[in-house]
Image (cartoon, rainbow, N blue to C red; front, side, top):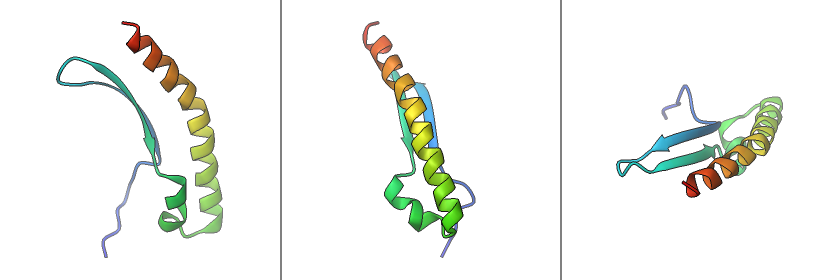
Amino acid sequence: MRYEKEGNILSFKILINKQGKLITELSGLPEEEINNVFKDIETRAYIRTLIREGRAKLNGLHEYLEKQIASL
């Protein structure tokens, strides 16, 4: 079995595709996968909180920028 050394817990990107269209992307580890990735109970709680709080902050930015891009 191979174990990865790093992975995406939560990320936000602003991209431009081949057609020149701006795109925002909010992605991360699904909450239901936390227990499969992290074995320590304290670490799970910490990661769960980081994802929840991070999504709460980044979701507003993501939605705002999507509206701005759509209006261009």
